[in-house]
Amino acid sequence: KNQVEQSPQSLIILEGKNCTLQCNYTVSPFSNLRWYKQDTGRGPVSLTIMTFSENTKSNGRYTATLDADTKQSSLHITASQLSDSASYICVVSLTTDSWGKLQFGAGTQVVVTP
Amino acid sequence: DTEVTQTPKHLVMGMTNKKSLKCEQHMGHRAMYWYKQKAKKPPELMFVYSYEKLSINESVPSRFSPECPNSSLLNLHLHALQPEDSALYLCASSQARASSPYTDTQYFGPGTRLTVL
Image 1 (tube, helix red, strand yellow):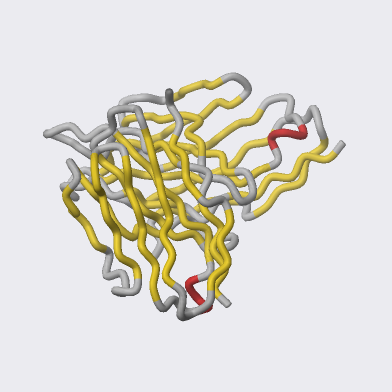
Image 2 (spheres, helix red, strand yellow; image 1 turned 135 degrees about the vertical axis):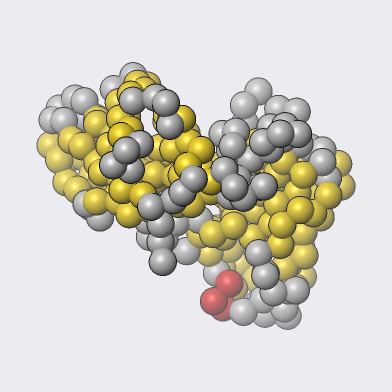
């Protein structure tokens, strides 16, 4: 069973608009949570990383939030651009596993239209 | 240099062929990974190398054979693959610290798109 659930599966937004992606996880104990952006046919690129003590982290127009109590994270994209069209993947890292194996969400496919 | 490079970008092979995928990084990372990603699915971990030693093999079939000749290079040797092995193969690297080797950010390469006929 996937321990990292993302919603929505896909999203279409107009250029210039904002959007928010959700990530719920059941991974425990939790080390850190990352958001990656993956363009079609390319490798994922890290956007933000947060430990359990951090509530928010920004990277340009991307802002991630984390609520470790409710095990929820969100990624907010401000003033979307056509280049934001990609899959956004939530990735959670374990602590008990000695190799800190990553748990990947299935991703949210974002399409930005002119 | 924060780049992980992979070659080739695309590979088409028959089920009887032998081919290799290559991955290289010059960030001084001592942990390197191979992932397999099918369309619209998250990456699946295949192998992990730490300090040039195989640390994790996620029950991958023996037709996939990893090799880490030095700290900068990672190869994946392919032999007698099946059509269902067609996927995007991603290489990644991260710093490997003694206390917590894999909680550092993994840097991914662009991937090799493999098609098995």
